[in-house]
Each structure stands twice: as C-alpha cells, then as structure tokens.
Length: 72
Image (cartoon, rainbow, N blue to C red; front, side, top):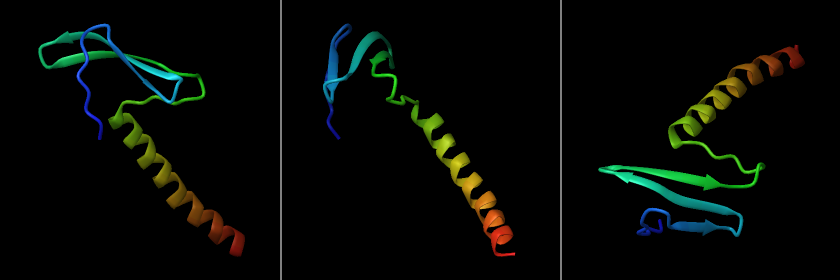
C-alpha cells in the first residue's frame, strides 16, 4: 500500500486517467472527489463487497439449478 499525505485541493493521479482530489477535511473525515472515465467503475468498498456477495450468491444458486436442468 502506498500512503500519501495531501492537503485540501491537492490531488493524485492514477494510470494517467484517474484523478483523486482532497475536497475537504473535517476532524477525522475526509471528502474526496474522483474523476475517472465512464468505463471505470468507482464504488465505496462496502458497496463493492455487497455487489460481489450478491453476484456470488446468484451464480451459486442459479448456476447449479441451470446445470441440473441441463443434465436432466
């Protein structure tokens, strides 16, 4: 993991096309802005994990049923 110090209105660039800017710092909370191409998905980690779990559950249950139906 790379740890960087940034102040308000300072930014970092990732892969030439993703920019993360520090918008505001209040106590222990930091507000960031992310500029990325439309084809790049940006999620909060907890939302990303929920999506992954839902996708896994969908493939586990429907995949087995589809396989059973296919095999008869």
